[in-house]
Image (cartoon, rainbow, N blue to C red; front, side):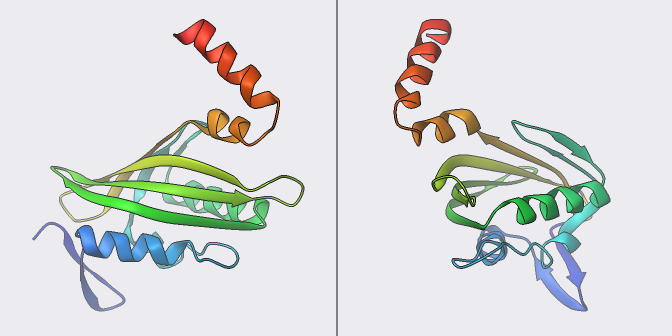
Length: 154
């Protein structure tokens, strides 16, 4: 089966349940995230893209994850749902980033994982409204931002 491959000698099947379990383990409820257990699932030529950046290659992807870990005092993620797609999986989530000098910031989003014929993640695309979610947490600024968005984007 294309979604099966060995990690540390153990046969692992990427399915809705294992994706949920692996990603839920990544973001704990007390402290910094740890991606070490999911990095082996990523292809060496992984392409990651979100609202802020695009990263090509596993070394740069790993470095990006490590930077996020250093910047956040704490990072939590609640996996709301996982669904199988023809070429991978969709995850819906709420991520809460806690920085030293700002309030907790919930970010609502979705991730599309594309799996190749060998069962490796070759592309990850994260979708979220970073600025809208951050600005919602800043009293006074929230109203100004929403007024701007409504005026220029409908």
